[in-house]
Image 1 (cartoon, helix red, strand yellow):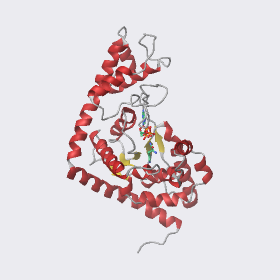
Image 2 (tube, protein in one colour):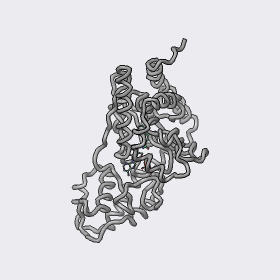
Image 3 (cartoon, helix red, strand yellow):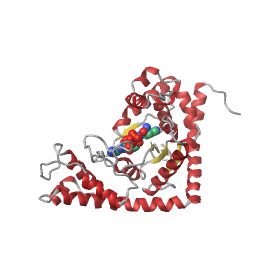
Image 4 (tube, protein in one colour):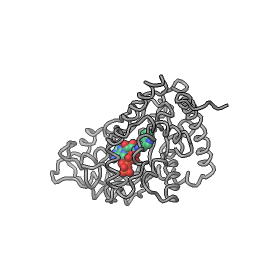
Length: 333
Ligand code: ATP
Ligand code: LTN
């Protein structure tokens, strides 16, 4: 709790271009949570270097992601929007937590196994201890809730295990965080293969709608989206491509899937795909305009980056000092 509000922490990596899935499944929900909680939303650039990056590209993408947080509606006065690498407490706590995490636990992480098989030439120790850094992110702010997708649940579980282990030895130091699982309809699937989630690392560019896609590109991708040959307009698992498009339309327009089915019943898929394209564009258009405007407001964005890193640093230091004392580091005089 900070100032009577529960604390929320989440972060996103600035690797790849953000998709509509990232926006509808994460960013949009973050905005709706920012009244209820005291929120820390980080651009987790330290996590990104577990995979080799081009430094100039990473720096640029990290800034664009932070700008996107603001453009999506996160008020930088109310929410703490900052780069993970600007708050040294993440690295410091991460080291300490490494000493309370077992190799066996980390060996079980499916994301590690997955990434290690994809990057066989660079299975570095950072990739292995990635979940410990993520635990440090969360525990540093004593977060009560953490909005994460299903793929990150295992990392949240290990965070809780590490925190409980530490608390059992040293007393009540860390808040044990809970996952915040968003509303249904937020899992957006690939437009080309509706059995896979829409992902920024998909090799097929037609599978995902990127947040920076222009109206023509969005329309073309929607028109090409894989559906089925049933020709019936129903919202059901047996028609996964159509179901996904209904989900997208429904989240973009605020209508329920039932209302969408009623609206398009008896009309062709072609008509519906156009409507989806328009609905998506009407969401992306203002977002893109605001992001472009902020890209030019250098001083304003710089001041937000500085102030928010200081604010995050303040809370981080409070936890860090407590932890350092508990483990026996000499007190600063
Ligand atoms: P990558 O392809 O690099 O693994 P990703 O697109 O899967 O990236 P992440 O960086 O793992 O995205 O996730 C960022 C946030 O976006 C997470 O909170 C995740 O749950 C959410 N998210 C990602 N893809 C989708 C999707 N298709 N539908 C809903 N939410 C998503
Ligand atoms: N691993 C997450 C990003 C991430 C995160 C976090 C999410 C890093 N630290 C702390 C929630 C809380 C991902 O790749 N989506």
